[in-house]
Image (tube, rainbow over all chains, first blue to last red; front, side, top):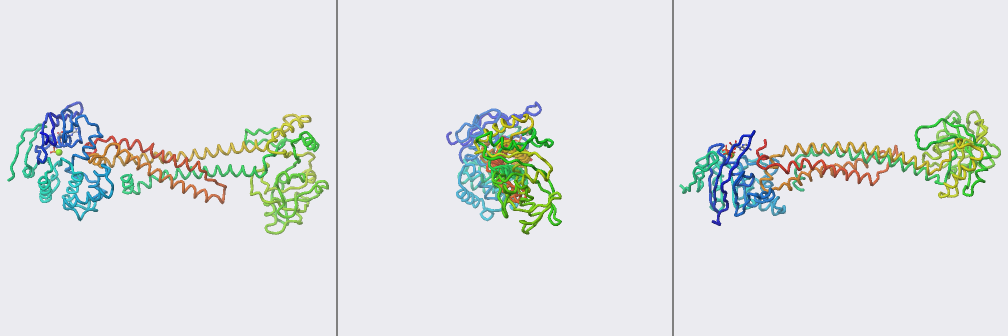
Length: 231
Length: 393
Ligand SMILES: Nc1ncnc2c1ncn2[C@@H]1O[C@H](COP(=O)(O)OP(=O)(O)OP(=O)(O)O)[C@@H](O)[C@H]1O
Ligand SMILES: [Mg+2]
C-alpha cells in the first residue's frame, strides 16, 4: 500500500474543559490513496473539522498515529509540522482566511515566501495558478474587491501554489451561493481529473456526490465508508 | 524583512505615532547631551586660551569641592612685598602680578555700564595673552606714575561707544576721570580668571588702590615657567607665604585644578541631562511594546493563517521582531537628525556639540529598545497555536 498518501490509525482527540473530558474524535482510522476524491460527511459537531485539522497537521491528536506521504508525524516537532503544511498539504477553509490588506496575488504567494522562493519566481507561479482558477484578471484586487466565490478561488489557488500531494477543504462551499459553489466543485473535479488527492468536508449531500468516496462520521466515529460511482 | 515592511506600510499612521515616541526620546538625548558637551568644550576652550600654566593666589580658604556655594568675600592679608617674595622664592615662576578688583560703573557722555574693574601690573596682559585691538595696553610707566588710564574689554567699549572710536576719550569711573588707552581683543566670552575678559576694564594697579581706597592686593596671578612646573610653583608659593601668613589666610589654586573641577561638574550635568532624556526614550520603548502587543492580538488570525500555510514559529518571531526594530531604528535615525538640527539651531544661543558617542548611544539604544520591547510580543505571536489563532475573532 505504498500509494497511500494519508494513513491515520486509531486517532482520538479529547478536549478537557473545566475538568470534563469531551471526545471530539474517537479512535478513527482511515487511509486515502493517491488520487482519491473523498468527501467527509456528518452532522454539525460530529468532529469533521477536528479530524481535518489533524490530517492537515494544524492540530495534534491526543492519541494515535498519523502518516502523511509515508512520514510518521505523530511525534514531529512544530518546525517539521510547519514544513509539511508548507510542502505536502493545501488547506482550504470555509471562511477563506485571506489576508485582508493584501492583494490576491500576494495572498497566493504567501506559502512560497515561507519556502524561500524569490519574488520574481513567486509572482510568476502565483500568477499561473490564479489564471488556472479563472482569476487572471483580478491579480491585484484586494479580498474586499472580490466576490465570495472569487475569494474562495484565491484561497484554493493559495492551497495549490505549492503543488501539495493532498488538498484539504473544510466546507469550501459552505459560505457560497449555489452558483459559486458549483464553480468551485467544477474546479475540484478538474483537479481530481489531473490526479490530485482531495479530501473535502461537507454537510451537503449534493456536494458529497461529486466525490468518489464518502466517509460518514457521527459523534467522532466513522459510521460509513463507501465508494460511489459517478452519476 | 519584506513582510515586516509590508505590515508597517499597511499601518502607516500607527507606525509613525509609535516612532514618534522614539524620535522624541532620541532627539532629546542628542540635544541635551550636545548642550552639555558644548558647555564643557566652551569652558575648556576658555581656560586653554589662558594657558594652563597659571596659578591663582586667593585670600582666605576656598574649597573647590563645594562648587556653587560661594563663600563670603574674604579679607586679603597680602602685601605688595609678597609679590617679590614669591618671585624670589621659586625658580619655576616666570611672572607674578598683584590684582585688585571691584565691580563698578563707568560712564561716558550719559552712556553708563557696569563692569569688573581690574587693577593690575603691566605684565598682566602678557600673562593672560591679552592684547589691544585698538590703542595700547597699560605700561610700566602708567603703573609707576599712577596714571588715570583705562583699557576696556570689548563689551564695555561697545556699550559706551557703540561704533565710535574710544581711544583718547575720557570716561568716568566712580567720580574719577580716566583716559581710554585701548580696547582689548575679544576672546569670545568665557569664565577665565573668575570672569570674562571681554566684560572687564583694566586700570593700573597703583591707580586702582587709590580708586578703591585700598592698600593691599586682593589676589595674585602667577605664571609658572611651563605647564609641568605648575605643581612645583604652587608648593613654592605656599612655602613662601606661610613664612608670613597662616594656612587659612590664602588659597593657592592651579588653573588645571580649577578646570578639572568645573568640567567634572559639567559632565555630571551632561550625564544627568542625558539620563532624563533617556527616560523619555524608555517611555518610547514601552510605547513600541504596547503597540506591538496590540498588533499581535489584532493580527492573531493573520498569524494563524501564516502558520497554516507553513510559517514556522521562528518566521513569525523574526517578522515581528524586525517590525519593531525597524520602527525603533527609523525613529532613532529621524531622532538623531532632528536632535542634530535642533542643536545647530541652538548654536546662536548656546554653544552645542553633537558628539559621536551620543549618536552611537542613542541609535544603539533605540535598536536595543526595538529588540527588548519587541521580543515579548514577538514570542507571543510565535507561540500562537494555528488552530486557536484561526478561530480567534
Ligand atoms: N478547542 C476546543 N475545546 C473544546 N471543545 C472543542 C474544541 N474544538 C472543538 N470542540 C468540540 O469538538 C466537537 C467537534 O467539533 P468540530 O468543529 O470538529 O465539529 P464539525 O463536525 O466540524 O462541526 P460543523 O459541521 O458544525 O463544522 C464539537 O462538539 C466542539 O464543541
Ligand atoms: Mg467544522
